Amino acid sequence: MKFKTLGIIDVGVGNLFSIKNAFKNFNIQIEILKKPIFKNIDALILPGVGSFQSSMRVMKEKNFFSKINYFVLEKKKPILGLCLGMQMMMQTSEEGVGKVDGFGWIDGKVEKVNLKNGKMLNVGWEKVLSNTKFSKIDKSLFNSYYYFDHSFCLDKSSKNIVGISKNNIPAIIFRENILGTQFHPEKSQKSGENFLNFFLKINKLINQ
Image 1 (tube, helix red, strand yellow):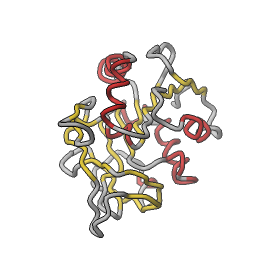
Image 2 (cartoon, one colour):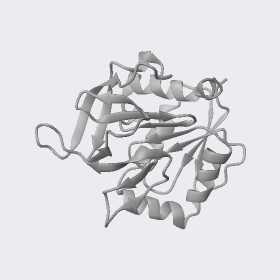
Image 3 (tube, rainbow, N blue to C red):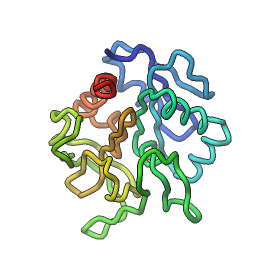
């Protein structure tokens, strides 16, 4: 069963129009949430563009932090984190002054990108491969190309990494009702649309 209403968190750190537009082919109501009021919201999108530290500070200042935690951990409703939104699901990040805490739902930390070619920025289309034989993630979502644009990424220690890019970047995390992507589904054309459609049906996995 797909969701009826999807809420997109708006704390000024994401391209909300492109995310909302990515769902135009789905029969679903979209709410842009400028305040942490989640009444009648079936699932959340946690976008993010910019700095981990400043984004987490705004989350707490606007009272989103505790409300999202309750939505995800207590009510066990689905959430999808996009790029920085996925990074904020981790325990800590190196992006900022000192160690910066995230939501802490996923074990591990966020670190600076360091590609084999010495580049510290990962931008462009990459194929995403399955990182485990036992993932509940739809196999059709792997071996597809998605669009990446980031300079920080998850470390590779987390057991919740189910997809990894050809550049060896953790690309998809999944744990119970928590799903995250380092790539941008809203910029990934047909592959991204397929991924968002998968998220809209995630309740089937949660209840297995």
